[in-house]
Length: 522
Ligand SMILES: Cc1cc2nc3c(=O)[nH]c(=O)nc-3n(C[C@H](O)[C@H](O)[C@H](O)COP(=O)(O)OP(=O)(O)OC[C@H]3O[C@@H](n4cnc5c(N)ncnc54)[C@H](O)[C@@H]3O)c2cc1C
Image (cartoon, rainbow, N blue to C red; front, side):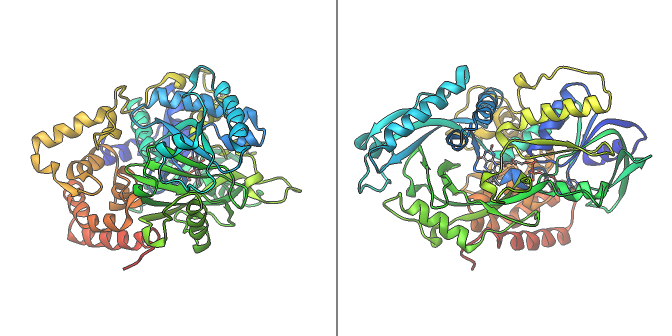
């Protein structure tokens, strides 16, 4: 369905079973859950799908080795199960990633081998592979870039690696495939109430300024770090339930790692872990954990965070990356549940477990969790919504639901592998119009057909949608993505029926956006 058709569909007088506010991992997971249980479902995202935290993760589908060290076994068990299900249901986007934890003291190897063997054991039948200790020689054979002085060896373990935004877009397509409705650039601005109870939402189409009154039996607030803003529209006196925490990543050339293995640094100066993970032919390094007061859609990395990452990873590598080597830097805000009174306020100690809160008016809000557990969060949320709205109870079917694009055999050498089954559709576009095969960026291996496909089948509305989330150009090489913007804008304008003025405005806005991702401004 085209956007115009969906808009007229929303305008009709019908009542939705469930309306979901927020098109990040949490909202999308809940919408897939609701629609596959047969509930009439509408999801509204104020900007683009996954524009917030859900496009700024470390791209790991993991049980959380760190939570194991903290003794949070229930959380690890839950995440390990979901990790296995994600690999099973979206093999085109999730892969089994080998990690090395290098050891520079004698006791590290036995300590981590025991811990990680327990991690493997907890995974049960959904195990990704066995954790094993490696000798110094074997470690350097796998990751020659590691600092050699005092290296005693390493421990190998397995976790999952994925593309967060691509999964988000495939979830939108799954919602649509299953008969649900999801719209981007639709901002919820108010609630419809009757006798103090929520009966729907008011939403604004940000492209036209048109306002919509949408009736619903029940509403889910899945707006991540913006959750309190929505709660306060319902009740201005409500206390805050979210505590944002910023995490930053940098992207560098793969020559710094020289390995298909990921590096896991088990203890940073501030007692966290840091990863350097191969991702789309580059290396993603992060992250940090800095409490923030305000929710922002486009948070910015601080110099201190960038220096911390460079310094920490540099201590483990023979060739240390500098600021000049950073191809892109991006920041995201974790929507963590605010600690109860008496806690020390440090976000790293706040539980990552999700929470569901229901207000007196019947608004259901969900916070916390992580990408890995998005499905389980959706299941819990829909259980709550269905009972609150007295919808006919129905069993969840998402554990074995194939996500849009599902394809079992994946050739990772193919630059379009992450489209899964949709690759055939993109090839059909190229067959009809061979010029679409031309690269917009040879370095990033992104062609014109991907832009056309993003508009026609993946709901892209702005240049930023294509360069940041349908392809990952902005995160992989911000400068190169800036160069690509003009060509992308022209193709999109043709597809969407926009004029030269739109093209110019989009290029200007995109250039402005890239400033936050470029360390080396020119
Ligand atoms: C640095 C970092 C690294 C991480 N790494 C990992 C990892 O490796 N693996 C993992 O499993 N998890 C990871 N996470 C956690 C994971 O990314 C988050 O838990 C998840 O993305 C949160 O999704 P969300 O949908 O709750 O929030 P968001 O993605 O922020 O989505 C909320 C959405 O609501 C929309 N919205 C807000 N207000 C309105 C409104 N009025 N109307 C309509 N829409 C609205 C926003 O625009 C936004 O798109 C990481 C998080 C961070 C910050």
